[in-house]
Length: 112
Image 1 (cartoon, one colour):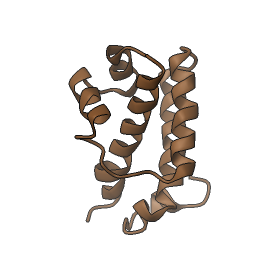
Image 2 (cartoon, rainbow, N blue to C red):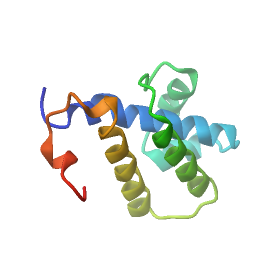
Image 3 (cartoon, one colour):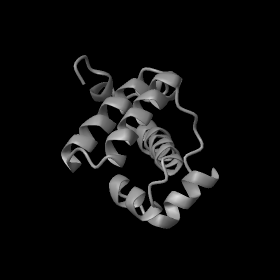
């Protein structure tokens, strides 16, 4: 597989799904959820229904997603801050079983 393929095909969709589920539980409109995570409202519906983002994140990642969802729901944070938080969640996921088969040493470097 190409470097970071696990991130692209498994981890980011799982993060998007977890954010969509958390925001939906907070009664955030799906259009706002879509804008926040850079997806379409149709994609958000698929995340919420379980048709997309099938990998289950480890509990530490789900907890980080819920924390980020609270920030998004309250309107706090810029797009750059959102991207930085998602990157931190990716690093957590890469250290779990989801990222073990990914040969990308850049993602796994200390301080990443």
